[in-house]
Image (cartoon, rainbow, N blue to C red; front, side, top):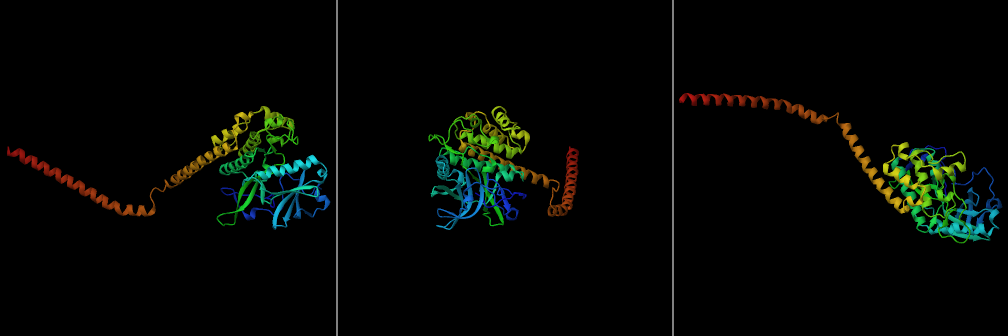
Length: 392
């Protein structure tokens, strides 16, 4: 979860998603949580000050299932984001088990691109999970404020796919991939300059489930997710596999490349109908800067049939890395070509021009001397021929 936001702040990103420290605001935001001017129904209402070994510092946000606090782990003096089940669910055994399942499943995933779960516990019937406290902002905030370059989009695509690959390796499906669940964690610039570098972290596995879930806590046929980013099989209530997340990833990438949603509608029903029936315009037709191979990859991710999508997220990572390498070579050639064209009008540097000015008179003298010598030789040959002829 987060400790920083940049709402209302323009963010001129540098290559590789870096940013100056001054461009970050200091307010607090938690993705997918209600604004703090709305009164939550949560453990916060109970004036919760401590749970387990965690001392509550402040509330970060709240949602339908849990409230998130900034807290201090008093055992090891570490700041964490503490998610506590809302009060209204405390007496619901199924809700409590679902909440704990979310934590246990998320804790299985070890990846730099998935938010880390430190601990899962239950304090006097109140379940909680402690996760890493992240600074930064959501991808949803970012795309409303800046236009990303293709190298930046490709890097985001690669890191999102890596996070999904790590989750899918544990048979864990996210089920709600969208910009609000993609966090850009701020890290210090390795060069030591006063900048920050950003790394993708996938958040909120609250809707996730194991592929072979059989405990009845999540049922096939139940539609769960965010309408604009849902896969056709989610809408149909079909059994899901990791390729459902790949469809949602395709929606996010289409939005990053074009600034538009691939599926439109005035209602949820209209959007779902578009997802099931409409093939969106190729991203390159809207934005010519999108590499052809990347546009084709997005089309594959958005295929109605999961059998026609990439096999898995690992495959997506590999394809994006190939496209990144090709784009890097193209950009290097483009820069080199521009440098050559820039220097063509100034064909001779000043020093060379001066040297050429000094050499030119000598060249003229040598040419004149060569002509004179050729003339003398021609005259001499003529005289010699005349003498030979007259002797006979």
